[in-house]
Image (cartoon, rainbow, N blue to C red):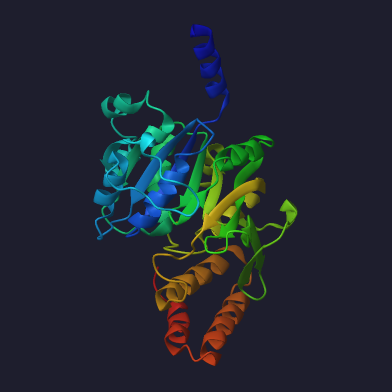
Length: 340
């Protein structure tokens, strides 16, 4: 028995540590379904970190109710497993989390299986995608995480997904970020994104790849599922908080590539993504954020930003205007000079 434990400990030591960051904002139903799927991961050297971005819908209370086993999850992708409850948690505010938490509390859950413990962080305000995830990243780096997995709360993961992501990452020390093959939640066999996409620097637009694509043609990894090397993050910096929503994953991908890192895709991974579950697929709010961030991105990464900014904004404006979506057309126009 002692020999078996030694072998298990040795295997675990060889598995890079991964902190799974799940950002929640008024979306606890999606979050607990995501968490339930994460509990089934076959990879065993991970820690679950849920960051709540100032929710007002009772998210934290409901996530805790799920953790205690009081709130079962229904999903078309799996059957609820009450044997994986309770999940013990430690709750931190933002300053405590960014300082690495409290050792005396961390020690209380250290020996639990990875799917029976989690960290809950309350940011106290809606910091956006970049700001909220950065709180979790700082916590992870304080704990010497080797990789950080940014995972949208409106996803369901296959049990082999994390193992496949890590296997892809460790094959090449110059891989800074690994993406996943994302499928539509409502059309589980239809590919939504093949890892990432391409930016057109002339037209001011980006396009996700939806079929197998050589990694050399991938400009960015989609942030819905993005495994990041901690070493790379320490070199290029965290997510740029000037992006409240959208384009922050593209910006980070560009900075990684500029620093000599490569992007890759774990083709074995299956992740089902609901996409914009909180705000809706067609929303004026999303249009404002998207265009504000697009302006910032091209200002940062293109030597002639006025052309792609102008062409991109005009194209998105006309597309909505010609569809008589006047509120969304107005939102595109507002996004061109909205303060970040």
